Length: 432
Image (cartoon, rainbow, N blue to C red; front, side):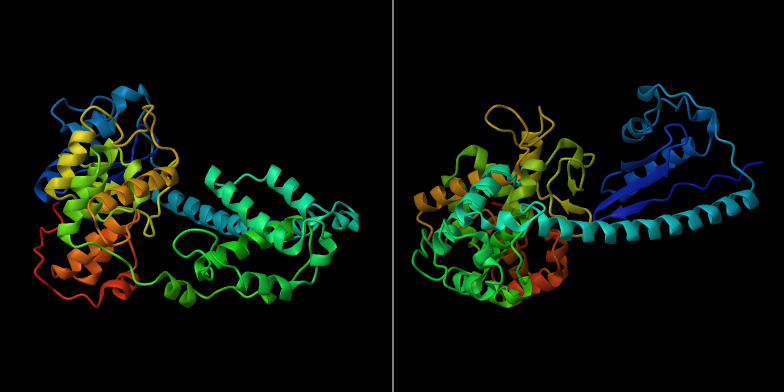
């Protein structure tokens, strides 16, 4: 006689009610979003347990099941026909569980050992890559080695490759294209002096010392190239700007007042206006907006759940994030997802597989609109997120509430917004 099955329990993910269970027919774990309404979620859970606890209904669930439960059960769509599983006796199950736990511990030890060995081999590979089996490769000129390395380099995006090429060309000009690679071995002091003396070549800071954040990027790119071509050096002797320096050079975060946010929205084209209003209303990161799909919305469209998945380039510090949508954001997503599965597509009708490129286009549209609307604050792709945070803090929301909405650490939110106090901003002030 098998052990009795335990009813499925209701779980919470932010503002959503979800149910997770091991599907007895499909043989995998299934997650169902039951919505934000507690009463409706409990009713759906009761219908789900009615099927889950009765093996006679597994293959042919009742026709009166709620649509979310019937869709998630999915037996009819899958075509899988399996007999009900036979549960082992409790004593046998406990013994098997102990054996599995011992096997997991053994495998974890093997994985840790293999990872350590993998890191050691990678360090050895970086040391010898480019120099072959002898030191003759270090007689190559710096410019030639840089061109060969760049020809084989594959970055995250086309823009990333261009930035790497620009950085190495600047490094090559400073040390000389004909300089043998051997002359750079043990040249930590010269490389450090070069990094400290870098100045901006374009933009509003042209001719001024490069910011600490940009010096971190330059150091990372140049040292990666030198390690790959086989130049021996002590990375610890080339100082890296601290996080304090990076934040000080970056300056205080910028946001817009509600009036400026509305004027900016009026100056944007329809495609970008929806993105701007959505970002100000919900505090989304710019890279999260083009990844929104219809499957991310709860029943009724009132709750948005962002979860990691294949092909999704999301910065989710806590695994997933649930956002209760205000009326303006709900209307935007309902309109954009009425006849499509994704909220944003390219001009050719394809989904955005490179959120970074979408962010660059978005930032360019915001800058053009800010110039048209004569907004003095310098805008970028994240200013809508910061505007949302500042308005919520001034409306009296706690730091913890704002951090949960943004999917960020409370310490970071407190650092940037704790000086703000409640002002004449209504709780609904983010509806633009």
